[in-house]
Length: 296
Ligand SMILES: NC(=O)c1ccc[n+]([C@@H]2O[C@H](COP(=O)([O-])OP(=O)(O)OC[C@H]3O[C@@H](n4cnc5c(N)ncnc54)[C@H](OP(=O)(O)O)[C@@H]3O)[C@@H](O)[C@H]2O)c1
Image (cartoon, rainbow, N blue to C red; front, side):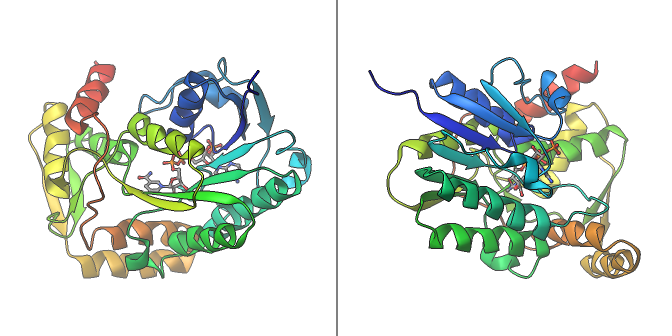
């Protein structure tokens, strides 16, 4: 009889992590989820990502920056998938603490427990944003992973529908401040489509980096206009010059370094196109329509 493969999903409570858990379960894996708060996964996430509490086989609870209680996290695990990362400002934790040191700690446990493969989610266009703290932290970890004895895949997505959902929330309020003219292009991807790419990588043998985006290319301005349309509002977009946003970052850094570091990614990312090889069947227009329906 073939042994059921056991996977640890780190970042299981996040937008991508929940879809990945769901996809692994649909393909017959035993799934151990690392979360900070079990209650969070009992209900769907804000952008429609599934509740996973009832489908996971095992839950380990803990914060990766205090990992002492997580020592057995990779026991009996064949494969680690990590979408664990800092995506919102935290008063004490930095991207270096979470994305780099946190994932490095999981990698060390994986090596100690003879895990065979590690799939990690980093970022697309990383070479263009190499000095941004979030990217630095992701790539420090990618370097560790590549040097390790494990077989690996690095997934490089450009932008998730959840991130575009933030434009929807702003459109709902009636007004969006846009940095620059919004002419740069992106093909964002739905979490479920990206989860298919991530779980497909579980059965590959060779080390590989996979750049991936969604099926439709839009300019950032077009995405904002679509968000206004979905919530039935007349588009009201105010363009802020890039120099002003960069000046704002310098001021923000004076009183909140962690916030400025995370915002610097958002500002830098608007300077160029993020068109990655297309994958998937889910469309941003439908995603916005679903968000609008939920608000009714
Ligand atoms: N969003 C995008 O457009 C995008 C694009 C490219 C790459 N990425 C990368 O993809 C990854 C996943 O993104 P996402 O949008 O799914 O992020 P997300 O929804 O914020 O999920 C991040 C996950 O990491 C967990 N986490 C954060 N700090 C932790 C800590 N100290 N200890 C334990 N768990 C911790 C979160 O737990 P909680 O639920 O408890 O907070 C959550 O499960 C990130 O590394 C991100 O940089 C994102």
